[in-house]
Image 1 (cartoon, helix red, strand yellow):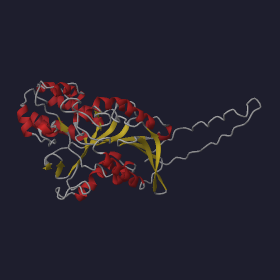
Image 2 (tube, rainbow, N blue to C red):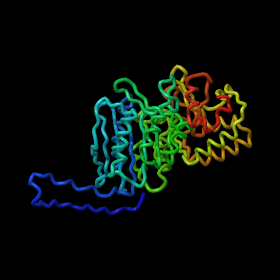
Image 3 (cartoon, rainbow, N blue to C red):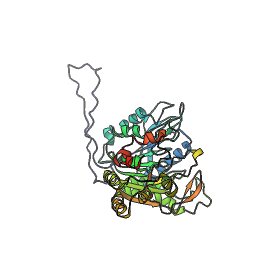
Length: 401
């Protein structure tokens, strides 16, 4: 964190002049200069769905975590919509006790994954001089399903809202939203399947570090009593966040024995990418790809983080490194891997992870980042994939995709 700053409050006195009537309003004092230094973090809980109870539990964990934050000049804002009264709150540490302060309430039945609605919340935080800071962070919390756009049978989206029907936020909409916000030190997705190269590349201009899991995450999500202090700790924030996300689950990992939402022994995975290296990764990918590929061999021989069956919504999130091992010769792969290693800030996984669809499965040989492999070149999903920035930048048309 940056060094502490001193702030002065100037008290303005009104002077009654003869020309002014006694009922004239006294002008409001003008706000002082924005607060500089410190960090502002927004946690966006789009929980008007089956995860509502988890959101409320996580909010209590956030309060516990904020009570441990000793740094000054920090702000933790939480937007929460569980289907009742959407609201934006600030959690403040006052003498070791977390105080919840309501900043704004929003209309009931709000679509919290709508683009306009999300932009409104972002402006309420990031356009408010009170929360101006040296650095910013964002945690987006909800259901998630990678890169493929809704309403295709397979869906690229982050965030689900079930008020007045079911709504999703597509990645293109999230890109538009982030363009209204300040640049982030980190963006963390506390949602399933979000560590995909396609999504990371789409968001590369908005954050220094991109954090997520390539597979399903634990039902309870992050342990926010541990994570919140890491948001404001000294040192590299992305690394702090990744460690705080992973360690609580690593400590109780037990191959899934006796697993429950209150005793998650089924492990977790978390990966951090350095956004500044992603364009170089796209360039080297395009350079080393050959025009000869056998999709059937890729689909059968590469690890798939997606344990769902075709009838349960399977998309296919395949290990990026293993794909490149299959597509490039040894020399080309070595060159490619050197760039990948620069992009990969950290990768942590327990030996196995848990899937709600397939139970425990091994993570042996995985590398943290997923990549799509098409099953049909004529599908609507493939047509959508060709419109992604990653598809174009990485030269995937060379593969016949």
